[in-house]
Image (tube, rainbow, N blue to C red; front, side, top):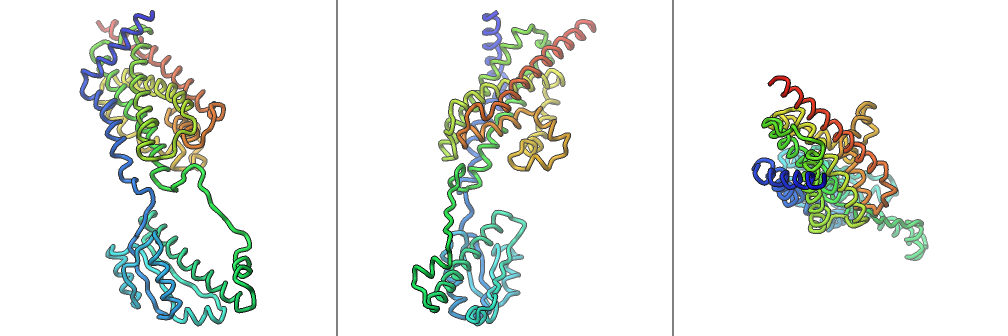
Length: 380
């Protein structure tokens, strides 16, 4: 029995090497994605976004706000103008991503103690750039506002320390726990990596099984199919270790919370995907059809996994059906193990789900392969 399984494992790896399309999917695609997918997020956070300041006050206070805005790393004040329409035209042309309007009589209102409003306009079509514009101007105005308030408290007789304590009686220090850089790459790439592993392995297994179905090689016993499953799972494990053990280290993404737990996850994740891919390949009986269908599933699976879109907002049927996709459990467990340092007990529901999916897909694969073989024999 072990000899049959080992021979099928070796034959599967040899078949992958002979099939250029499958080889590109199972080996080439994960490597290429590992290099090029994190590249757009290498800066992690958006900085130096071009903006303008519409100064209608022309006072020392408005000039101070402009200087603080110029010093903020989020934004880059390209020019200061007194023409609101000019700034709006520049925003519409894409020359800047936003601007702040310092209203007339700004300093007079502040001196009188009246509420003063600084309006910030940005391009809402680009969420990250718009966030940088709003935060950059808010930090600049907030810093100047705090300084003005402290000076007023000092003028009322308080000392410098007492005025600072009165201005901010409770100090807040924000420490990000699982995304230290608070970067977009550290948020999206570790999750999408599990989806890349799934899609490449799923399509590669389906293509290979489709070839076997076309040539009649799907007529095999359970031991042979087990060896084939282990062969594809080996390649899936290597892809996962490539991301978890090297890409995350190379790109300095959050990692290493529970490395052995991550390995245990991959040991269940890869067989679940491989079994599902083989099942789909035998079911379609056509390698091109399997490829056509699976190419369209990546984006829906990303939304169903729950890391980019709150799963609670999905319709109830989708909330149940999404657990039939290995990436749902894989992504949730991987983020907990790699970034949060969770124990295996903390992700036991996800691990059990992957184990059940592997067994169900494997059982269905045996049944479908036997049914296809019986039909082929009857037709002959």
